[in-house]
Length: 629
Image (cartoon, rainbow, N blue to C red; front, side):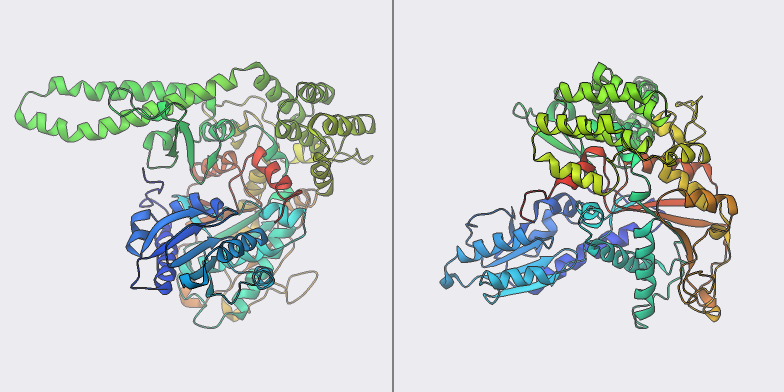
């Protein structure tokens, strides 16, 4: 089953992006030895799913790839002459590669090719040199696997450690990757005239993007008509609350229960295969199933609040049943032929319905479970600032029952974020209980969470969340999840701060202002800090600017001037790319799609460093603790 989504209905030519990425890899493989077939590809395991979205194995075999391995420590037993490594720049990978090179006989005359994704790093070359293998027929290249189309409206870089590197380690390298990816996007689809952002990392990327464009030579500067009119960059650090919450859209709950990786989910074979017509897999076998708009049924229900999914599936089942009954009405040869042509489509729809119904049943079993409902009630109380002591008691109960550490940390951090920290009498007790229950290795995790402000002692000053709650109208009391009129439906009454910020951005004068021409100069002159800076530290509406100042991180806008011949002819039609630095959730994507339906004249696209949930967020924060990186 192909993992790739059909991109025919995308607002932008995402197929061009995907094809370009695939062609670059195939060209790099050709450069190894165009006439030889004796090649193997050794993959960073984390890149496997991403690569499946770009190129399939038959295309690789045509270029001489005979087998694909995952990069692991130990000897690599192969007779292949040309070994190609496709990896992220990690020190531990360099040591694995050095070990494998030393494991081969010098008389084998093998060649070793390392393709770094997306760029090489000096430290990796230094390690290869220290390991004594750099000169042993090694060729180093870069493979720009950056923004990959996941669906007709989603681009993701799938950088799993980006947030940790920036927020915890202070390593801003991934921000360069993001700026470079956005620069490449502009080279393909034209300069983006208007940029708005919220957060320190968003501003850093914007400044870097301007610098890259300023330093680019004429050949690198896009002369294309701007197909993306606005870029809104949201730093994850301005809204830690949203990924702590349990996602309540259909796709979001699938992610919570099963885990979605690179646009697909692993399901038990019996949930995917038709037991009447398809071969049975061994017990316990799991099958990777894509979740994208190729499945029209999934596309219809993915963004619904889970409470609304059942009636949609029931209506679809009834419709398919009516389609099958058409065969009884077919009397003539022509009518029978027409039905047989449609039968394949009906059977495919039936297959999709069976899979989605099985998924729904599994998710429903989880949501009906008492611990799930209790945890959800504790979250809702915290978000509404209602009786935090009850939620604190639930956290202590979870620790005593030794529930999964990530579930405990999600609720604990949600408590801290919504209550401006944790009272002294609870803070030390909770810290002690977590370490004694789950192990002292989690001391590093708690220190990291303290460092980024997610787990801290209660401050004496006013609670900033309480003000944001009121200013952005985060809680909608009478929320109709089945016929929503507000983005808050994605969390059954709570509106994600990140998407409320997007709403504020698109309503601001900075968003609607005219595009600059190059005659007016490359830089704006309105910056309070630097008259040559492209950054203007406001959005132009006093109330909006006041609200934004109360949320962590700067807010700003910038205009990129265009040649007169490239100015948009119809500024009433807008294409807006909302880019999340540090990751976004499926519920946030659903909320963006809701805005897409609500705002005529605006097509929204989503870009992100990674699609995350709360569990993945904490995996990122703890990922490198005690490990060789």
